[in-house]
Image 1 (tube, rainbow, N blue to C red):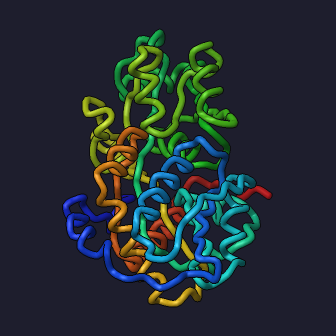
Image 2 (cartoon, one colour):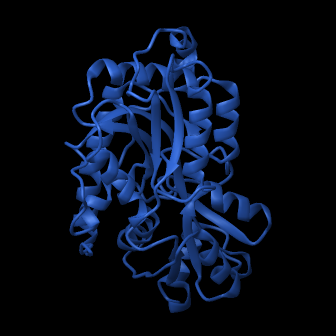
Length: 328
């Protein structure tokens, strides 16, 4: 079974304000810490990075300050490569969704970094899961009903997601494999065009982040049938998980993490982690994360590193099990 470990509860962050005032060393000659984001401004990851940066600049970095730099390209791999080959002084940090380091190395023939050796984890920031939905005019009201009808109806065997080879793509593969039928995946450049085709009847189902589909469900345009978390999503408390619906191995949760280049001194990593912990304990930041549908995570660098290692191995097993062929 795919499981999730090592996330601390929000209660464990309550001690973080105690370390907020601790002195921190200067991380770089120009006293600027660059938070590298591998996606365009305005997206969920960018908003997380900017909320974090604002808190870090609220007296948590002593004589340093942080800025967000968007380096979109190659689905986040460009920013990861820049940090992997950048300075080892904590002045350049990667803010990334976990699949860039845990999934892509197994699905892309060559990535310009080694996820297990080129990075030093600073901490996990937030976590989120995914949801599987159909258009309301299908009159399907449960995952079991969808599976039963999809086995005999090819029109129900098409589903869309925000991209080929991303976590939602694998949700569809794992769902089909667990129930003995095939699903035709259609990859889109984002969630919005996938939802547009779902409403237009071009595809029968869609898989995307739970926050994105929860918003669409509230409009009545679609019905979410299941979510991928280990427990029900706070965004959709009435929607069962795949595990509850009998698909025991389909438990997938991704997360946003903060990473420095490997070789960054331990005292720098520790100082950064203390500042991040204090930031995550801030009520305003927690509210900003919640508005985006993300749950605050947190924890030590060692816990984030362990989570990275575990997820890397987890995805290696999943990719092999579904027979996914790496792309160039």
